[in-house]
Every structure is written in C-alpha cells, then in structure tokens.
Image (cartoon, rainbow, N blue to C red; front, side):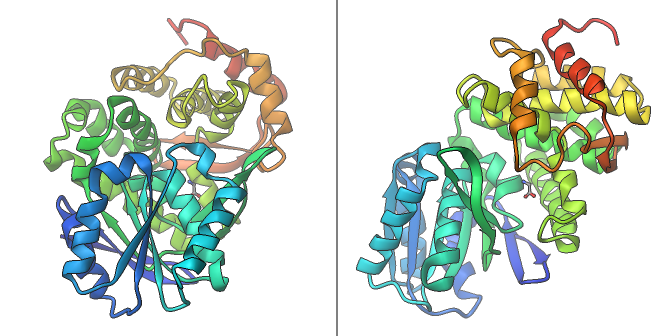
Length: 366
Ligand code: GLY
C-alpha cells in the first residue's frame, strides 16, 4: 500500500493508494484513531457498484456506519441537495465527533465535502474517489462546494479531508468516456510535470486504457504527488495553485458555451490544453511540436481535438463573463517548457481569439 502525505497549512493527512484499498477502508480509517460513526454519502450509480463493500469494511473494523444515496449527476451539487443532506444527518443524530465519507466522483466529493465542512461547523471527512478525475484531482487539496443557478462552483470552502483512500481497481467500473475524461486531467499533469512524464504517457497510453495497473498506479501516484506539492505551498489558491488551471480557462468557456451538454469537463479541458499550448508558443515560444504531439495523444485517448457544434465566439463571451475566473484573457497559465508553467501570463484579446478560433480548424500545420 502506497501512503502519501498531504501537508497543508490547515492539516496533514494520509492518502492511501493501492488496488484493493477499498476493502481496507475501515481499518485504514481506524488507524487514524478516530471514534464516532461514519455516514457514507454516495450516488445512485456508485451505490450499486461498491457501497456494500465499503460498508462491510467499516463494519468489520467495528465502526458504526450508515449511508445516504443521492441522485447521480451534476444536479446534486445544489443548495437544495445540501439542505436535504443536513436534515438527513440531523435525523441520523450525527454529531461533531462523527464523519462523512464521500464515496464517488467529483460531484459527490464536492457536495459531501461541502456538507461535512459546514454541518455543525465541520465534522470529519473521508474521501474515497471512484473516478479517475477525482482520484488524480478533486479528492485532494480540499476544494469543496456546490453550484448556484447562475454559475458552477460559486459556493464552497477549503476543507481538507482526514484521509483519502484511492483504489485504482475502481477504474475498471468506469465507462470508457469517463476514463477518457479523467485522462484529460492526467495529460494536464504530464505537461505540468515535464517531458519524461509526457513521453511516458505518449509511449504507453494503451497500457492506461487497458488498465494495466503496473503502469496506471505509478501514473496516478505522480499526479497526486504533483498536486500535493502545489497544494502544500498554496492551499488557498492565492498563487502557485493556479498552475492546476492549465487548459481550464478556455475549457470552462467551452463547457459553458456548450451549456454543459455539448462537452464534458474532461473533453473541454482537452481542447483547452490545445489552446493553451498554442498560446504558449505565441507568448512564451514553447516549441510548437508539443502541440502537434499533444493533439495526437488526445486523439488516441478518445478526446476531442476539434471544436464542433459550439461557436468560438460564444466560448470567448463565456470566458469574458466568467466573473470568478482570475485568469481571463489577460491572465492565463501557459508553459515556457514542459514542466515550466507560468501563471498570470499576459495574453491579448487577439491572441486568445486566434487560439480559440483555431480549435475549429482541421489542424494540418502550425
Ligand atoms: N482542481 C484545481 C484545484 O484543486 O485547485
């Protein structure tokens, strides 16, 4: 069992990573020396896959356990769902010494984490991420929250879990599109990490797609380690943590312009990464060959490399009206080299427009 340590200003906590870690959830949590009961919050998809395994593991470790199942989908990240969860926790007589266990992907992790951070001003939190995206990104670093009618992720907090239990065997339960979606974030990490990691994925991506755990587990580990290093330096997203937004400003614009239906988050990030590498060439003279290699890799991973069905102008308007984004056109994350991200880059409106427009073209040259 691999044990990594998150060392943030507000909390230190372990991240366990191993095939089969799920069955050991109860013992791993007990090893922290906490008491109280555990209320698992999961969704209707995940419940059918592994809820009973996790409950059995806690019971076998002598822990009282209960569960709440919410509807699967982004709609669950709402204030009304959070409010229902507060009431359910109250009815279950959940106290400050008790713990919420978020069992699911990014939506469940964000929602259950937000509820844990606010119920009785904060109770214990276990993250058991079940998707690739949540294993490499959203379960770590403490960003929790919900959506409001007007915008996504506008209400939330930084609330670190007590423990993260990551079982890559769960990836076998994912539909291929969801694995591809998570791979977009993995590709982001390879670009942030450096040439050797990018090349390793480029050469062996089929081993990831085939879920060869001898390759998958170390890749997930590297992504987690990268995120931990960033978050330990900048827990509250005031500086370096922005590097994790590589590809996300254009990506968020694409998601919003497609009304969150045309492109999933990972698909939009894939296109956002291509735009970011074009801008990195324009602004920081990154070798344009990387963009060509990235396009080939994303395509092989089943991710989009061309913007279709969504207007580039609408993407730019969505980016301009994203009030939360600190990295709008004048202020983006780009790469000087692979492994050398630069935050707060000045990008002109014309450069941004060109980069987004070029996503609609069939790329042949540079
Ligand atoms: N997913 C970006 C962050 O955690 O900061």
